[in-house]
Image (cartoon, rainbow, N blue to C red):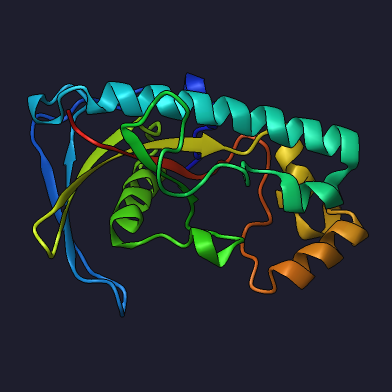
Length: 216
């Protein structure tokens, strides 16, 4: 079965609509408290304008990600890009985007991570597995996923996810190991000895961009 190719972030197709909310009890890692996650359709009234705010924020982040990585590789080379690419200047928490204070957190994660800091939590793992199952079934990845996380302390968090694909310039550092330049391989092994984020081809699903959006 051939996995459908993914294209650039803004062009990912919407998946078929579901008539019901999916509830998943997500098993927690060793230290964090348990959490429960619910998936909603983007048009679900419970979500309000959270999907719209999150989708626009991810569009902005995705555009910056593409521009920054392309510019760094072109001007400084792939080795320099390892340290400078992928929005290192964007904080993981707090006011992530100027002028969009409701976006309070940002993260990139994957089933095959490079940086341990990007390892998925239980809710993100549920979202990743959701996309993986769609692709394995021969379906398209969803354009966005809307998730409400209920934490053990009673607080709730709205997360918006966008699947992202491997672009042509990404294979310089994420492609097959034997195709990656020797100096780049050496730098990757020094910085990320447990790197799992290689072996990709352009167009493959890479992972998810996630933002947390505060409701009105």
